Length: 166
Image 1 (cartoon, one colour):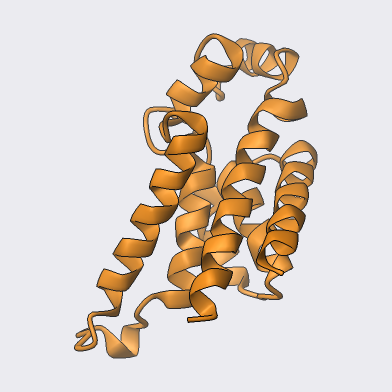
Image 2 (image 1 turned 180 degrees about the horizontal axis):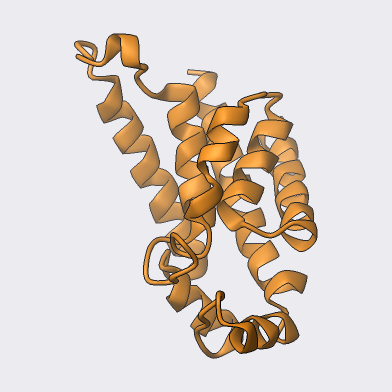
């Protein structure tokens, strides 16, 4: 069951990245859609996290960040339990680490610019019109970043379902 939903998450994240862009949001949207979550505030909060945060490329891949946001949504502490006497946050840290390392094992890195270099041979300033054009020409939104968001969404859904069943 988790594998089927993982594949569905891959397909949706791929599709959303092709159609809309914004890797953190496209990953989070796919995960939420597959797991039947309506969390507009969380989705909106992911807006600036794409492209290694603010499309700088120097930070963690937005698809990874979107996956970690979903893990936190399902297993994290809420504000009314901020003191966290059950230490829920440490379980989320463990799950986030497991997800991050699984992603890194698949892609070799979780840093946006490193992924760009690996998949397209160079890095991009996605706010620069010439770089944006070259990014698109090299398949940035045709198959490169969509495959990355798909991978992150699949891994996150499988991990979430596995841990919901415990």
